[in-house]
Image (cartoon, rainbow, N blue to C red; front, side, top):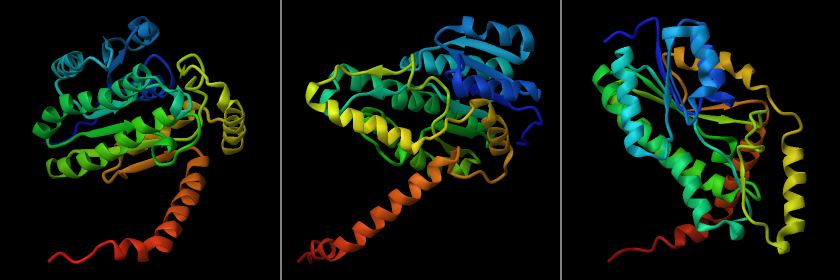
Length: 280
C-alpha cells in the first residue's frame, strides 16, 4: 500500500514540550494529527487554528483500555495511521534509596507501560497497512545514567530495549521504529512536570554533586521548537535510524560512556571467558 502525501500522526503528551512542537510541525505542513493530552483544553488554540486536521483526545496513557480506544478512535476518524509518537512522560528525581514503591511504579506506568500499550494498540493497523513509523521518545538518559534520576533511567533503558526488539519484529511488515534521544531542552521536564522523592539527609552532599554534574553536562538548553525540522526529516526518510540524538551534548556523552564500557569489558574478558567452562 502506498504512503499518502498527507500523513496522519498519533501523538501522546501534546499539551506542551516536544509533543506540542511536533504536533504543530505536522499541522503546519498539512498533515493530520490525533493529539492526546490529559487536559485537552490545552489544545483549544490548535483546534481553533487547524480545524478538522486535529483530533484532540483526552488520554492518560497509564490506562491500557483507554490507549487502545484512543488509537482506534484516531484510526477510524482519519482512516489510517502513519506516525505514532510515544512522547508522554515525566522525570522522577531522587536517589535510588529514596524512591518509594509508589513513585517507581508510577514512573514505569507512564514512561514505559504507556508507550507499550500505545505501541500494541497501533501495530495491528500499521501491520495491515504494511507501513508506519513509531517514534519512542527516550533520552540521552536511556543509554547513559546519572545520579538522582535512577527511576527515570530505569524507565527509559527499558523503553530502549523493548523498542529495539519490536523494531526487529515488525520490520518484515514495513513498519519502522526510531528511538528519539534528546539532550537537555527547555521543556519543563525538570520543572513543574517533574516529581521528587522525599530526600534523605545523608545524600545532601551527593545531591549537590548531581546538580553540579548536570550543569556541566548541559551548559545550554535547547529550544524545543528547533527540533521540528529534524522530526519531519526523520518521518519522511525511507531509511530512518533506529536511534536519533537531538541536541549537541548526547553524542559526546554516549561516546565517552561506550568507550569506557568497551575498555572495561576488554580488561575483564579473560575472566569472562574463563567463566564459560566446558559442559560435559
